[in-house]
Image (cartoon, rainbow, N blue to C red):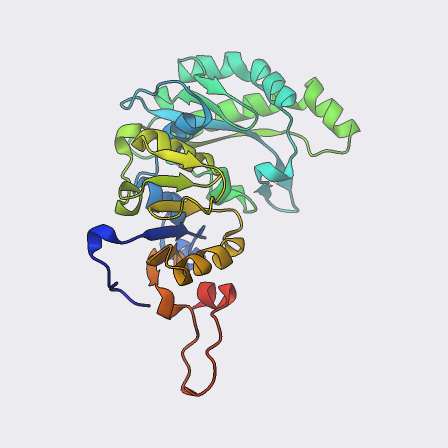
Length: 319
């Protein structure tokens, strides 16, 4: 793709589209532990991946102390196979707001005693609490660990030994409490997966956020993920959930179905509404940035006498 554009750098009308990334799983065999954070989480937040405080900013209107270490707790379902447990994603368990509140109320005395603090905010899928004695844990988000054997993705000790063991003790206590509780009795009657465990992740503080230049240079963030909502508040820039054809230049987007946006973005290049579309993706877990201008929208061919065919989204993402 073309790395240079004709307009001056200050005048470039650029739209940046980030795609979600997956772990390079072959790396795990050569490492003592999984890499913390999915590739796009690391790109957006930096090496320490402080998800919890950014998610808290995105989920609530309250002020967040930038120096306070915060943890995210989530009620989850662990699916038992013949020889291990698999973490199910949040979109697979159909947890209601009322069920989440009941589960939190039951577990609250245990959480506040062990974390030595009060819950800061909670909603249907996320509960936030000052990390307190669990601040040094290395943890992995539900998005990163779901669908996998949890043995490899459980929190791990870093500077202080015994903290992971302390978390597992609290986790087991809450599991036993919920097992006999009314929420799971009712869910069982409806044929729903039980909420049989609690997951900790995102431990960190706002002061640890390392925002990439692509976001710093943006005037609008677009996307429904609460990480983006939190970063918009953190950076004090505008945020929209959905793509708006009137607000393209200077925007950074992370969309659930990016392929649906490509016809609009390629048309904006052809119509001179945009000078560049930058696509950031993560082949083999590594960040890659490609710049598309009008002349990059068609396939290159040696048959110069034939009309050039437009690039498809599949060809762009698989290149």
